[in-house]
Image (cartoon, rainbow, N blue to C red):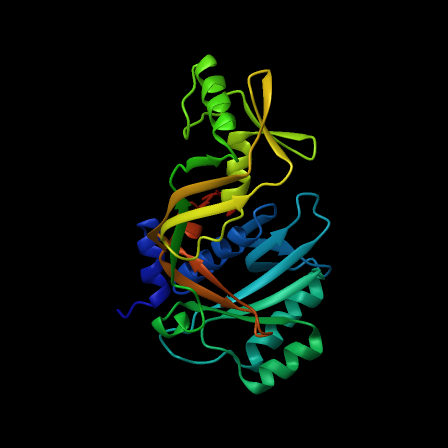
Length: 301
């Protein structure tokens, strides 16, 4: 016996087979709509009574929890025959829709619809959609994997060289450092060394960070960055304001490259096309979490 593609997909996901033709497709459809409408009540194979008191079999029913909105879906698995859904099927479903009066109604198939079926459905307000297997050609125009190349640009800790106008200023600065247990050219954030410009004091490491952060890092390699200072003094600890005429920062610019590749762990199984320009890819992880209550037909996660 020839098996429908959707029988095989159903067996792959749920490790069971459905004896009745078309049931696997209906169950897959109910799971697909549950994955897209997690806050709705989705049921497979329900019986509803219309205003004529006739009971109708419904392949998939979608309701809000309050019951204020209902959607009916008729499913047709024509994978083996390759046929399109014709006028007769849509016309018969209209009889059910006209008796139950849902808020929306759909006919769902895997191969499309004839021209007359489309015209009739449009005139009666029935939506048409295609749910079919995902094919390799469906990857066209879609992101299959993502590769991100990141170049990190960073610098080494700068060596700080300060310039003074005379030896007296150098000696005073060296003595002030020694009195505070510090050494020239290397400072930490906690060190009480301040650059005072226009009466605004900046801790020397904060000043250096500001200058180096503004330096463009487009090219890797050694850098010697000199700045002339005007009307600027140095304060070490709480003593002395020592005039300083310039600063030179020496550091290395490094470029490091890293590549990250992201591939989806989900296997694309189905694609839902609303025939109005929107399609949604359904993966195995979207469906494998689903279960269908054997008594009520309700789909749950």
